[in-house]
Picture 1 (cartoon, rainbow, N blue to C red):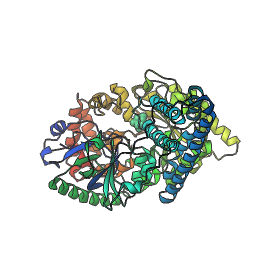
Picture 2: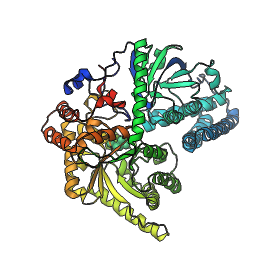
Picture 3: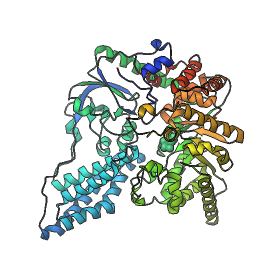
Picture 4: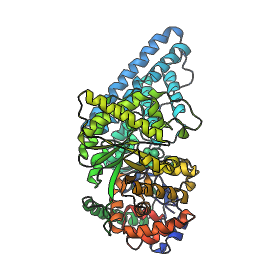
Length: 633
Ligand code: PEP
Ligand code: MG
């Protein structure tokens, strides 16, 4: 059985954990849905780069070198050992700068920036001084001292499941391998020799460091699968730039597979089939063909309006994590940006990002959308996304702790710098400043006051502040949803972050695999809150948007439109599919569905009502990505 989850294309961990059995309950004619009776062993992961490929496996085992035990040096060698460590750092800096320059030439500036966190870690005081003090005080060799320091950092970070932090650990490991190889006199792995023959292969690895990913050649590598990793990791970003299909987080695959085994890799659905039969291969070849046809159709859709059959115009915008993704969003038909996450500017950094760098990042997105709204979220830090320079205290419950707007209001240097950059960038377009994790009215009032003060300061310095950025609150806590009516008097818009709203409403950690079956955005409690916020927005005349993953789910989008929500924001990969749903559906039917589902008592009942209203208008079987919607047959 290939898949037991309801998959949402383009989402981070794309599953709402609706089992096929429950789908069969929801959709009485599920027997007519596409079924995959695969004979090969199928394993699920996270889709990281789209495309279907079939080919032989090459397992890459690129471990960090093992440092031998012992490693104690005589006192008189301490200074020389410290010098040796600094020489290794200098040599590794040269290596990374070379790789960065090559990547800039072959792939571009954004991809080259991927090596910045490693260059910064190389100079990080905590890493450098920590290592030096282990050499000086404990008489450890450079290898041992550096390894200890890295292990300490890793331990500090490894309690988290957050993609952005996991990504930094991967950068750190990349750097660790380089420094240790340099200190131990080992050569850097030569990728061209790893591939030996001219045969094209699917590379399987435990994880891939950005340095290795940047060297993958699409001429030799058909696809990539890793046991670990996230969709936002630097390696995943690179595979997308290289157009190499990729699935990450396929637990333990590299240990279960051998060189020469055959694999089907479906980078869009996020799954692999090990040693497929002829019938499996034929099935996937046909699917590949259908998806390519479908993608051609989607390109045509990009320029069409997102208007329902009965004339309701929906603003369909994109969620992006990096400025470079704005162009992609535009070419996939986004009418603006509904969520630009800005944490990439600070996570993994050891100093506040310069205002100029922030300003350029925001301006880059506005240049892609000069005439459309660009909603930029202020730093959503804390929880488990923390820049080293903030020295966050250890908290018992970080997700209920010092985070997002709470943290920004307490750290005026950080917040003011971001606001200055945002207000300066607003001269280039319709910037909308969005405050994350709001729970009280005073957070909005204090933020507004700071924004106004910053604007006046910039005006006094001679900047153009004539375009006033709108200010909005994210509704991602039950508290914010329940006080929406009073919040609405103080903001220009709401954007519902369903990813967090579900977690806080249901008291279910959104990253917990064990609790994943309880994380359900169609839970009646969540649906009631969503409907309340939508109703308040309509009554108060302020825009309500949804930027959580629920908007990227066909039944979710249908429901939200039925609640009267006029704006949805989804990942670029889901844009065309959601546009297709919008263009095929009737808002009147969605409204009827919402009226009946508000009395429902279970998520299954809600899904069934939505499905029954939508099915006559939307041929879900036609959706390349949505063939996944129904799991297996
Ligand atoms: C959300 O919580 O729904 C959201 C969009 O923000 P993030 O996923 O970045 O927490
Ligand atoms: Mg959130």
